[in-house]
Amino acid sequence: MDQILLLKIENGITLEARAECAETFAVGDSCYFVRDFYHDIGEVVRLLDAPTMTANTRELPEVQRRATYEDLAEATRSSSRNRAALKQAQTWVDKLALPMKLVNAHYSVDGKLVTVQFCADGRVDFRELVKELSRALSTRIELRQIGVRDETSMYGGIAVCGQPLCCCRFLHEFSSINVKMAKEQDLALTPSSISGVCGRLKCCLKYEYDGYREMERDMPRKGDYCETPSGNGKVVDRNLLTRRVTVAMESGNLVTFTRDDVKILPRRTGNENRPKNGNDGTAKRDRKGDPHRKGDDGGRHDHPRRNKERSAGNPNGGNAPDKE
Image (cartoon, rainbow, N blue to C red; front, side):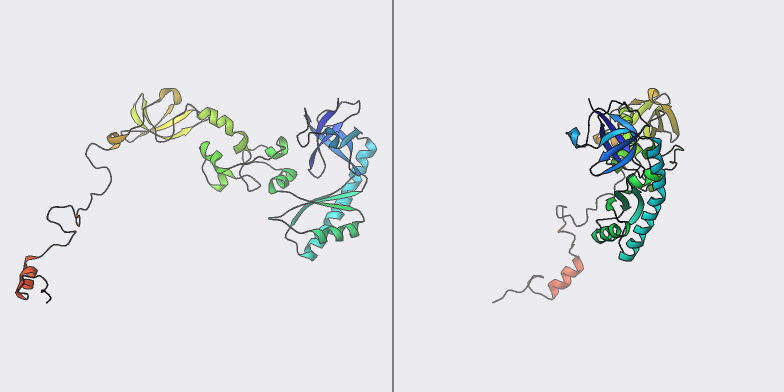
């Protein structure tokens, strides 16, 4: 039975491969594999039960053997060629004025393929660049556009939590993340709080989302009225990890309780939310100009003096003269 492996190449690209040989591979082993027309070396980062990219395992690259010392030495010698290829590519990018940022270049072990990875805001027409690089390096060129998350995972770094970046340690796939996940985890929606080193939303917002939803299931929400050992109040803050709730008491004090000390009261509806003094915070309705008000014609009041002057100038009593 074929063994399905997830391999990571030197330039950070990950791919699935099948191993038909009798050897059994483990995480951390270096493998010599063949893909299409070239050979390369990759490190096993995960053992898979089944391929996820395709249903036919015959379409996957084939692992031929563990990498030997000669294979690893050849890969080390290719590092200097990688830097030269990247410098050559950057020269042509500047000449062609292409809106792209080159990340790295990688020679396959047999030198038959050079893979150049780059970042760009949108689609880039790099056909002319491929022609010039293929002519300059005398080999086949493959340009691959990646995102800023992939670029950050290649460089690595330390996150705000003090741990190495998750994309470097164990994350191999980048799922869709939205601001709603940060809201439901009670995080401040400021860019510095929810953005990672790459400038995008933190990956931990996604894989910790289900855990926070589980913890939030029996926690009161902000704005809920509750009963505490010190009296009734309103929830103004909470901490899902420590399971503590901050309550604004009727006296005006802020007191923090554990979740077990807080009993959620039914939400107030109707007149229960209106203060007893009748001041509900809304302005009194101005009835001036109300056509339904007795003695009101829509805000225009007939002044007695004006009516008298109008009557004196008009024998019909202030009304318009009859037309004959």
